[in-house]
Image 1 (cartoon, rainbow, N blue to C red):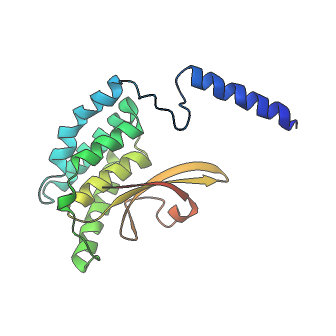
Image 2: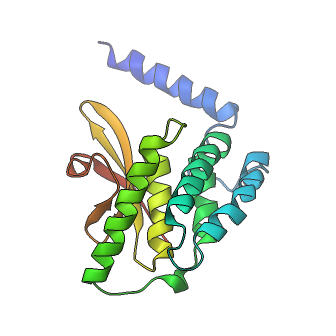
Image 3: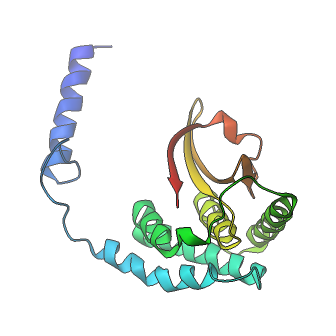
Length: 189
């Protein structure tokens, strides 16, 4: 293995990505360009906003709608754009502060069960991103604190994201195994 050759190849690769506008040098004052995908993501805002309003009525329908919207949004507009819009649609004023009570546990159990069932019967091939976004929106709508955690496992390499409310992982089939992933980013809103 030739270290100098690998370094040279990597430097030319980075230069190529920079010339194509795919990478921006740290500290660059260059503004990001206007993106149609970035702006079209806002088409999902009314759907997310309506599903996060009010009491947990129609929870099963809301789960189906949110799972479908998150699937379409992440594939059409990308993860960063989707998260930005979903964050904007959630109001921090709906969240309660403090520790979870027994009622909170029952609410989380209901969300967990409904989201798992919806995923099981959903016609789309839903992944962890869709599940995490749906659970975060439903948990937030129930006035409970929630965050999405994005983690990495190096051996074997894998990325995974999940929704947490307090110390509980919500509706994740890998529950109990999420701790094997090292958190890279946490999205709190």
